[in-house]
Length: 230
Ligand SMILES: C[S@@+](CC[C@H](N)C(=O)[O-])C[C@H]1O[C@@H](n2cnc3c(N)ncnc32)[C@H](O)[C@@H]1O
View 1 (cartoon, rainbow, N blue to C red):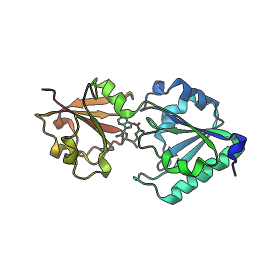
View 2: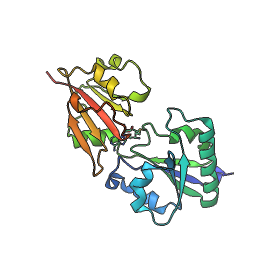
View 3: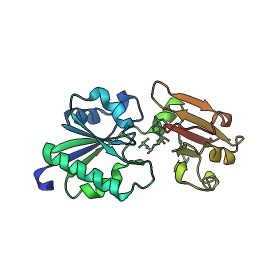
View 4: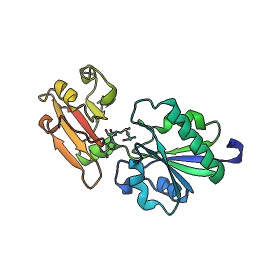
């Protein structure tokens, strides 16, 4: 079992939304120096690993399987923590990579409590998908007195309840939920942007409600809704 006293260290690196050049210098440095890299995955596929693959120089890569759920079942969290601790016992340091910025909907925080008592953890920020998307449009998400809301559509009911309190709303996890969004957006009062695969070569940006595809199954898509300035 790892003992925090013997300076066992885990870095958590936000690898950004897709373009590998958007990873920070610090993130890239710890990644390149890590003897072992932990990648969250679903059904054996890791989007974070795809982004960083070009930076790897023969390090051990460990896929940690997490199902797509708001709260991952305890069994997966316990297993992932145990795997990380076992590898750190051997290598003394390692890096966990995560999409975008680690502070936003990142699976790592479900296991943080299991690890923090046993190893030292340093978290390195990354470029978030929604700020990257806003820059790509380009659109200031908020200016002056404006307020911003970040909403994971997949887990929210009654989306219309948020609309009056904010000037800009960013909807993440929109896969399978586009129809719900369309129902409450008043196109006379709001500009609507639909961004798929921000910063990747296949990035696409549409403006207008009609662009939203009811059956969008792309996990890497988001919607920005911004009140028209009068
Ligand atoms: C679990 S959240 C992770 C958010 C991430 N930590 C961040 O800072 O962007 C996953 C959601 O982020 C959004 N997302 C992540 N990368 C994206 C990209 N390249 N383009 C558009 N949306 C993206 C999608 O809405 C996706 O369903």
